[in-house]
Amino acid sequence: MPGDPLIDALRALLGDRLSTARAVREHHGKDSSFHAMEAPDAVAFAESTEEVSAIVKLCAEHGRPVIPFGTGTSLEGQIQATKGGICIDVSAMQQILELNESDLDCRVQAGVTRKALNTHLRDTGLFFPIDPGADASLGGMAATSASGTNAVRYGTMRDNVMGLTVVLADGRVIRTGGRARKSSAGYDLTRLFVGSEGTLGVITEVQLRLYGIPEAMTAAVCSFESLSGAVDTVILTIQSGIPVARIELLDEHQIDAVNRYAKLDLPVKPTLFFEFHGTESWAREQAEMVGEIAEGYGGSNFEWATKQEDRNRLWQARHNAWYANLALKPGAMGWATDVCVPISRLAECILETRKDIDESGVLAPIVGHVGDGNFHLTFVLDPNDPDDMKKAEGVNERMVMRALAMGGTCTGEHGVGSSKMKFLQAEHGESVSVMRQVKLALDPQNLMNPGKILTV
Image (cartoon, rainbow, N blue to C red; front, top):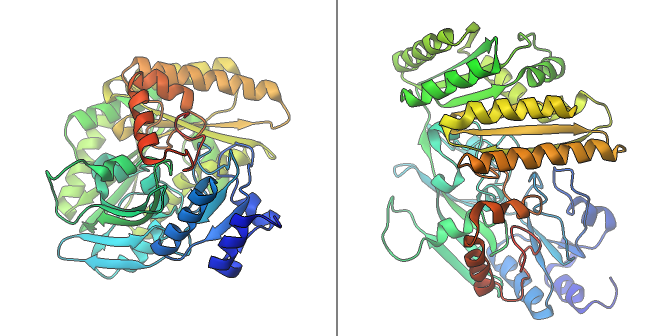
């Protein structure tokens, strides 16, 4: 953009780490969702908190929006440049700044991915458990309050982020939280920024809880004659206090897709994937207790995977569910969406949603981290058929409103982005006006990722 004073100033700061190339801008203007690409004016590749601060100060001076970018794996339109502006790509910020093995915590730059962190931790006997499937950046995972397959035992990012370094809309750098396991000092700014999706500031460093690698990990797969039997097994397992590490539900449509894509031969029935962590005896005891519960609800064909390579193959098949679904209809467009409900309402919500999908005639396998009441749909849509999209929109809206009526939330882990802004009002009512006041207090020019979460 010749003659643009902001671009000129950023180029003077970053040199060839500022790009206005069309391909680069378009890559940074679309996440993993179905949302149309909206490219930023330029992409700034930052390498430190100080550079992010300098970039943000220039954007504030010129009144231009800022859109943070990690790996681009968000699912609700979080990174589209709805009003143009400068995308700050933090993927080069890959330093692990501190590792405190005795205290089970570490501090990393925002561009470090979860897999890179766990590779670094491999010889320490520690690991970071939050696993959303995609190899997302930890800064992005904090910004969206990501969750994943291990959340039933280890919680979400909101539970595992101890502190942050954040660049505010005026370029100020603040550090929130700390390394102490608890604190009563002041407002909890860490929790404010976790899940803020870049609308309040740019996260540049994250302090994280770590965990000891369990002595034993055992995985199992169990198929059911009915979807209700599978979900009831989950509910009773949780209510019984069995500390399962992972419980994943795949309905028969999802199992069919996974079988085809991963070359598995699982029965095409509603299926639960389990993982148990602990000592050898405790992991085996957990598995036996869950096996008895599952049998009571029609579970059968238990298959065990104790070897690491077998567990990895199983969970990789689960993580590839998105790609497996798209392969069901070559050339299709995918739309992933999620809700979360109290565990006691999970069976009702899933069964009503499955019935709605079938009656609507759309293709939408169900998969979920059901141990905490969270499940997902992946609509597999014909991009050239507007009626297909209209039907999916109807199913999604009814699913969200159904979840809210049951005391749930419009999103358990994907975030709001631009997709679910209308549902945020339905869920939180007058509280949204307080969120708006917080947004304007920290970002009076509405430059931080505008058009996401709420309107200003």
